[in-house]
Image (cartoon, rainbow over all chains, first blue to last red):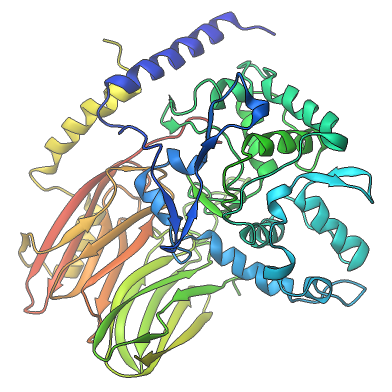
Length: 291
Length: 109
Length: 138
C-alpha cells in the first residue's frame, strides 16, 4: 500500500540529513584510512577494492569499524578492552565440554580450536557437498551437535551459538573474507542479491538504499555503514552482548516496517551468503564492537 | 546464583620491581539496574555486582563500589605498583551474595 | 532555516555549555555529593575526566577519572535516575589515582567527579556528554 506523503517526508528527511551533514561541525569527517590494529600487532584490512561482482555498484568496500566513533573503535583494538571476548572465553569452555548422547565434546573430534578452525569462517556460508546444500557456520555447528554429538541444537541468536561462532570466527581473524559465489551456490547467491536490492516494507527501502546509496551519511543520529558482515558476531554497545547476522537482518527488515523473516530461514541464508560476498577482500574481524 | 558469570583479566606476566603496570578487568554480568520493566510492565528487580576489589599479596590496590549506572559486563582499567613477585587477586561481589574471584601471578623481570 | 536534528543539537550544545556555569546538579546528585564530602567546600581542578563529547550509544559509555594524590573518587551521572555511579577507593599499591570504566547514561547530561584528597580536601570536575537516539540501528 503506497503512502505517498510518508515517502515524501522520508525522502525530504533523508535529503536534509545528507545536506545537514555538510554544514554541521558536531560530526567529524569519517577517517576512511584509519588503521585497525589489534593488540598492537595484528593489522586488519578495513578498506579494500570491491569484488568484481560489485562492478557498477561499489568501487571500494569498508568495514563497519571505519564508521564508528573513536571511543567505539578503540574498544576493538585490544582483546582485553573488547567485551565480546568474554563470550569467546565462555565458548572455549564449551568447546571442551562433553555434551549429548555420544559423550563427545567439540575437542573430541576437532582437537584444538586454533588448529582445526583456522580459515574456516572466512569462506562461510558455503556449499556442503555431502549434505547437498548451502550452509552457514551456525548450521554446520548445529549439524555437528545433533548428528555427531547427539546434543540439542543451539538457537541461532542466543548466547551459546553466538559465543561459539565468535570463537571460530576468531581463528580466521585477519584473513580475507573469501566467499564463493558461483557453482552450486550460485542460485542461492542470486536470490540473496535480489533480496538486497528489493524495496520492502511501508518505508519501501531496500538494503541498498541505505548501505550502498547512503553509506557514510547519517540517518537520524546513526552513522550508516556499508552493512558489511565481516565483523560478525558483533558486540553491540546498544544491547551489551554478541549479535548474530540473522538477528541484525531481522531488525533491519523490521525497521523498514515489513513483515520480517526468521533467523535460520532460507531467505536469510541467501541474504547472508550474498552480503558476506560483498565483503570479499576485507579481513574477517569478529568478534567486533559496534554501536 | 547469577549464571554464566566469567571474569577476564589482563595482567602482564612479569614486571620490574617497583614498576607500574596497567591492569584491565572485564566480567560478564547483566547488571540488571532495577529500572527496566518486563513484558507485563513490572519492574525487574535490581541485581548487580556492587563491589570490585583488587589486591596484591594481600595489600589493597583499588576498590570500586558499584551502582546500577555501571554498564553490563563491567570493565575497569587501572594502574598498580608491583613491589615484588606475587599474585593479584580480583574479587567481584554480587547483590545475590555470590562472589567471583580470579587471580594472576606476576614475576619480577 | 529548518530546525533539523543536527541544528537543534548544535544550538543545544551552546545552551548546554551555558548551563554548566554556575555549577548545578540534580537533587539526587547533590545528596550523593553531600554524603561524600560531608558538606565541605569543593574546589575546581586537580581532577580530570576523560569522556566522549557524543556517546555513540548511551548504554555503554567509556569514561575515566584521574586525580593525582586522591584517596577516593566519586563519579556521578547527573541526569540518571540514580546519579551515584561509582566510588573508587585507592590503596597503597595503586600506581596512579585513576580508573577507567564504562557507564550507562539515560540521556544527555553532565558527569561529575569529586575527589577526596590525601589532606582531606575535595576537588571536582564535570564533563557534558551528549547521548543521541539512533536511527535505524534497530
